[in-house]
Length: 386
Ligand SMILES: NC(=O)c1ccc[n+]([C@@H]2O[C@H](COP(=O)([O-])OP(=O)(O)OC[C@H]3O[C@@H](n4cnc5c(N)ncnc54)[C@H](O)[C@@H]3O)[C@@H](O)[C@H]2O)c1
Image (cartoon, rainbow, N blue to C red; front, side, top):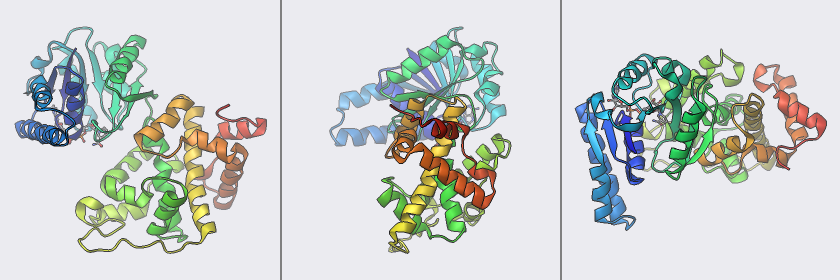
C-alpha cells in the first residue's frame, strides 16, 4: 500500500522512515521545499549511520531512500491507501489540508492525523467522508519510540479503526486505542509526573535534584521530572500542560505551574538552551541531591506516584482506554518502569485512596480528589489485575 505523509518536519519525516523501512512506497508532502530538502538529507544521514553500525546494508539503504518521493502537490497522493497528516498544530490549517486531500484520494483511502492536542472529531468534520478519519499519534522520534496511540473519533467507522490499527501493528509498533479526549492516554496520564514534582518544589519540600533522585533511585524512572522537562523543553512541556488544562475546562488537576512558566519565559528551556532547571554549560556540575533522608525521598516518590495512579484510574473510569492499554501506553510511550494500574495493585488500592484523601483534606484542593473508581474498588477490596 502506498502511504502519503503530509508535513516533513520532525514527525512526518520519522513516520515516512518507518513506513518506507516496512516496504511501503511513501509520498512525503510539504509546502516548504527547504523542509523537504532537510528531511531528505536527515534521512540520508540516519540511514548512513545505520549502515556504519552494521544494522543495514547499502542496498537496503538505497531501497528505503528510493521508496520515498518528496512532493509539494496533494495531487501526488492519488494512489495512497492511507494519508497521515503531521503538519503544524493548527486546527484551521489541518482542516484546509484534509478538505483538499479528500479531493485527490480514492473513497477508501484512510485519512489520519498525528495531532497531539487537537480534537480528531473537529479535523474529521472538515471531510465529506468523516468516517474515514482517525488519529494515529506517534511519539518522537517515531522510528525509535514503540508506542502509537490509535484515536478513533465519534465519526470513525469501526472498519477504519481496525484497518489502521492492523497497519501500524504491522510496522512493529505497540498500538493502544484511546478515546478522542485531550492528551489521549500518555499526555493526560503523565501530567502529574511534572505537575506534582513542580508543586513539591514550590512548597519547598525539596530541590530539583532531590526530587529527581527520589523518582530515579526509589521509583526506577529513567529520568527525573526536572531532567525530563529540561529534555523535552520547558516551552514545549508547559504548552502541553496549558493546552490540556484549557481543554479540560480548567480542571484544577491539570493546573500549570508558575515555576515552569517563569523558566520558559526566562528562556531557560532546558538542554536546548544550555540552561533549564539545571545548567548544561560545559564544565557545569550536576548538583547532588540535597538530602538522602529516606523518609523524605519515599514521601516524594509516593506523592507523585499516587497522583499518577489516580490519573490512570480516572482515565479507565472514564473509558479513555482499557486497563491493559493504559499500562502499556505509559511503559512503551514514556518508559515508566511499571504500568500504573499494576503499580496501584502492588501498593494497595486502599493505601492509594487513603493518601489521596489525606492530601485532599490537607489542601482542600480539587487537584487531589480521588477517582471514584479507586474509591469503589477500595470499598469492595478489588484489584485491577487478578
Ligand atoms: N514533535 C513532537 O514531539 C510530536 C509528537 C507527536 C505528535 N506531534 C504532532 O505532529 C505534528 C507535526 O509536529 P512536528 O513536531 O513534526 O512539527 P514540525 O514543525 O517539525 O513540522 C511541521 C511541518 O509541516 C509543514 N507544513 C506546515 N503547514 C503545512 C501545510 N499546509 N501542508 C504541508 N506541510 C505543511 C512545515 O513546513 C513543517 O515542515 C503536529 O500536529 C504535532 O502536534 C508532534
